[in-house]
Length: 235
Image (tube, rainbow, N blue to C red; front, side, top):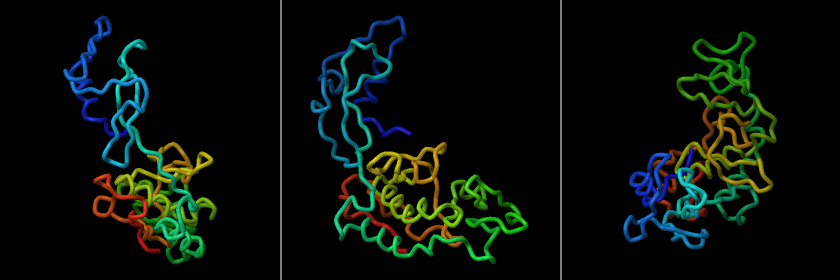
């Protein structure tokens, strides 16, 4: 999944893609609205705080062609200690950290139901067992993960951090990745493990975690909210 290109990138691609045996003519800026650059610092700042401008060489062009300004996702930290004590992410994570039992295995009467592990008889009719040991309805939520089916360190507060990323980027595919030394928001990768940039929605005691909110209604969809105004649901 790639960030939406700056508008002048679309103009460049649509107006100047030629066949492999043709020369590529790059007009002046005033002719096509495309920003040329040598360094990222040559590119204009973007008004949408979810993205940053970058200076790139499009794959369709030869190595000697001029670079142009495009966009990429901004680097947004999502570690529990990334912000001050009154930040919504810090407060919500502290609530989750202080309630580890919340992420426990479903009670016996719920085993086999959606969002829980299987009962001795397996999953209920219409549900299947996914790779995380969770009974899911693949037509409703193929990325459901029962919190009690994974080690506590992989789920404790992960729903909080993922919701922060979802809301900031106004995109439910975003997660807080711990793959690097500094956790940051990234688009999830279906081939990776949950909490390591993998996709997933945590279910707590058989229900979708209450921290997840509708990003279209509450998220940073206009790209003008600072991180301390990002909304996270209550535990």
